[in-house]
Structure formats: C-alpha cells, structure tokens
Image (tube, rainbow, N blue to C red; front, side, top):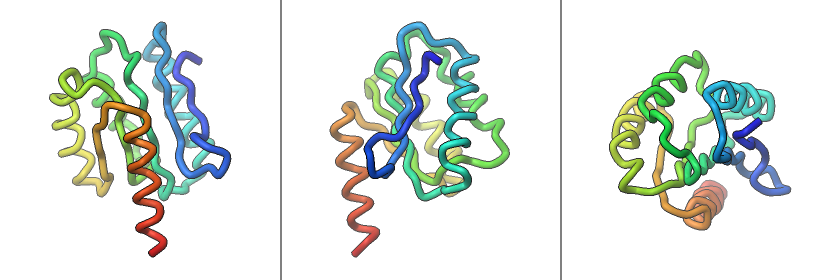
Length: 126
C-alpha cells in the first residue's frame, strides 16, 4: 500500500497516514479501510495525515471521496503539508467537517502536528 497507515507511537495516541510518491486512489480507499480496522469505533484517536508527498493529486476529488464514508472515523484530523498548496482545500474541508463535529487543523511539519496532539491530550486530562 502506497499510503502507510499505522500508529504514530507505541502508546497508540494517534494514527498517521503517510503518502508515498507513487500512490493511487485505490491506496486512498484502502487507507480508510485500514484506519477503520485500527480504530474499531474509537473516535477519540486523532489522525495525522502527512500530505507532503501528495504530488499532483486532485484534492477536491479526495475530499469528496472521503465524505462517502457514512461513519467518520475520528473527531480530530491534522493535515501536514504546504500551507500555500493545501489552504484552499483545507478551507472547504474544515467547513464541511466542522458541521460533523470533526476538528481539523493544517500545519507544515510533523513536529507541529505531534505537539498539537500532545497538548490536546494533556489538556483533556486536566
């Protein structure tokens, strides 16, 4: 599979999707299936989506296809990628997903995403 999906750390605090250079839409659909398998209805697990290697993908098609899932897999998604490239689709996605009570963020680095996840986790426990 050309989109790697797995736990982001050994404590299983978050999932990470990592797009590889030669991915295809079929990989994208399999990533959703793998995510559903790993989460098994646990909506409290954030998903970090590393889109730095997304290439020339049609982000609108991807956004549309992600909405085909009747049950959203999480209530928290953090996209990692170029702000200038991703900002237009991020604006659309954040609007749509916020209506479904899914918090969405966009950052440029994995470190920023990880920091955001850990800060939210610690604030949830206080």
